[in-house]
Length: 127
Image (cartoon, rainbow, N blue to C red; front, side, top):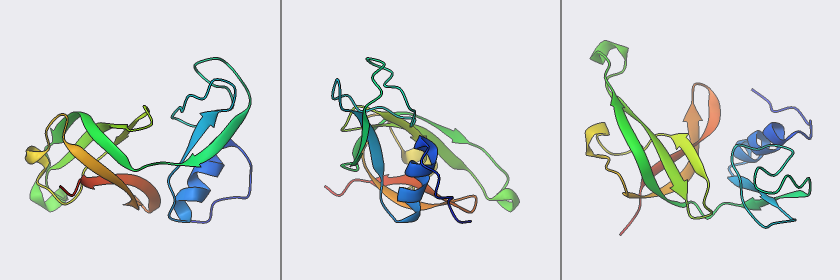
């Protein structure tokens, strides 16, 4: 599904994902990153927002396993990851059994697919 050429924060974020990039909004007034994308900084209420590539480095802040019957896709995890930039994203960790994901696990972000759209997903960090 193509991302429209609109200039709203959600469209900017989704267009970057479509291009394989994870971009985060940062306030030019106070320097703080924030997520979810929005037009006002939640820290200082500034309106000067610029976009910067995410480091991709993060740690699992919280996680849970959603149980499903195998014929419905089996179990999967839902987690909140805190990125190095200080923002938290709800996502999932791929490439590992859902029950093996633990709080404070180092993870790396990548752009993958979820429900037919580009999304930020995570995998265990290389040690």
